Amino acid sequence: MREPIHEFMKFTDLRDMLEKSEKLYGDRPAYVFKTEEEGKFREITHKEFRDDVKALGTKLVNMGLKDKRVAVISENRYEWGIVYLAVVNGTGIIVPLDKSLPENEIESLMIRSEVEAIVYSEKYNDVMNKIRKENTTKVKYFISMDLEKEEDDVYSESELIKQGKELLETGNREFLDAKIDAEKMSIMLFTSGTTAMSKAVMLSHKNICANLMDITSVLRIYDTDRFLSFLPLHHTFECTTGFLYPLSRGSSIAFCEGIRHIADNLKEYKASVMVSVPILFEAMYKKVMKTIEKKGKLKTVQKGIKISQFLLKFGIDIRKKLFKEIHDTLGGNIRVFVAGGAALDPETEKGFNELGFTLYQGYGLTESSPVISVEDDKYQRLGSIGKAFPSLDVKIDDPNEEGIGELLVKGPSVMLGYYNNEEATKETITEDGWLHTGDLAKIDKDDFIFISGRKKFVIVLKNGKNIYPEEIEALINKIEGVKESFVYGKPEDDGDYKICAKIVYDEELVEEIYGTKDPEQLKEKIWQEVKKMNKSMPAYKYVREISVTNKELIKTTTQKVKRFEEIKTVLAE
Image 1 (cartoon, rainbow, N blue to C red):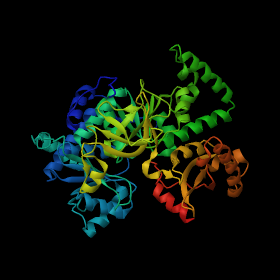
Image 2: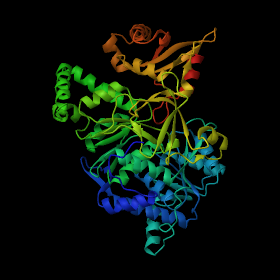
Image 3: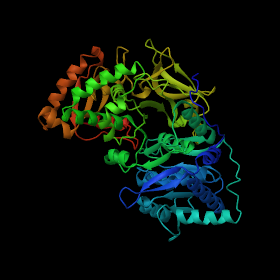
Image 4: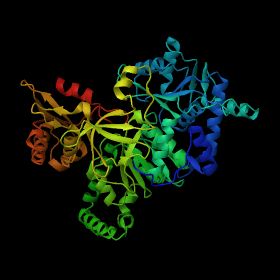
């Protein structure tokens, strides 16, 4: 088992975490917002944030929502965080809903989760008004994040906070003194998938707190750090690492205004930490390198990398000074990037680190609260997802001759189970507590974990050979002008599979690289590059057929490719 490398604060539940961190960081900024005046920012301190949480929690209990379920749905914003912690820290069970769900799925999940209140932003006004009229749910309280006052039986979150503060002033301690059972379900999270297929993951305070303590024990984050929050908050990866984690460490949070604004937001907010998905970091790295090339500085940078790598052997690090211009394009303050949610291209990790950016790869699942492993200052190995957290045990189930098998994990951050789905829970968690991750991996002699791909997406050929689509996609994505790719097995008449790839090209770059925008000509030019790539692999892994498009692959809100939907699309063509 991995040893912690940093001291960390221990807490029993999320309220305990908020109270202990408030004593240390109460006056530090917790949230930073732009104002109408350019260059001027508004800050909310950790104490002010916690006061709002206590006030809203007090009012929700006063409204009769003790031990009830409350849903929250919105874009990433301050009010979302208040609701989450006001519910879990003494009111009831929080049910974060995916902000990109269609109307019918929002309604379906509200029914399935049996929520009695929902807090939402104005974007969902029409959906909520329709649900109110149809009266198909158990919801008694519709609460708007944007209304200043109650209107047409829709409550105002800001007004409820004011009323909660008044209740606290009169001595109401129902919320403050509420007992928290750290072992019980406090968070209900729906996995991505269609409404019928999505499973409701049950998490407890103990699950989340164990994960927060594990993260702190291996990653050093300071109260001076500022996180740029980009991934949707309803997703456990962002919720634990980009919301609860900075709050526990006294850091501050700023919200990204969208994918096109990342570079500007990093600069404006002087962000030092960003947690995101590999596809984003890969795109950022490609853009950085393309800019260097366009400026005719590629050879200079490559020479600088050689010199700085040589000096690193003697403990001399000049990368940030040497590559200052590159750092300035990403705000000039970045200290740590953390990638998770899918496999990170090792070249991107290596490239960023060579330029003096610290980029760590992590790995996890909603079912494990979510982080299972991550690289850090002490333990980093290119291509790996680091080592398992100190509180967790991992093992490989039924490894093949290459040592690859399903990764199993056991420990305090493993979920309680799936809500109302005993069968799925038994399939996923063994009797002695091992969680089946569904990911194929191998563990090397030094305990570094290397993920091969999802178990359910492996293409098994007639000769018994296994092909991991993600492995081939990583190679295709390195071809110039390729944005992303999707590798799949097309069933053949003889019962075998033909390895095929759907390739998404970058419209802005292809003309410059290949001298054409014509799809048929592009297909031929990219096909020549794929054939060159094939030669780097055993013949059974060769890509035999490709299609090209400028349309992005179908993805979840956290930018994971929806493989089952893509398979349906490509096989129907």
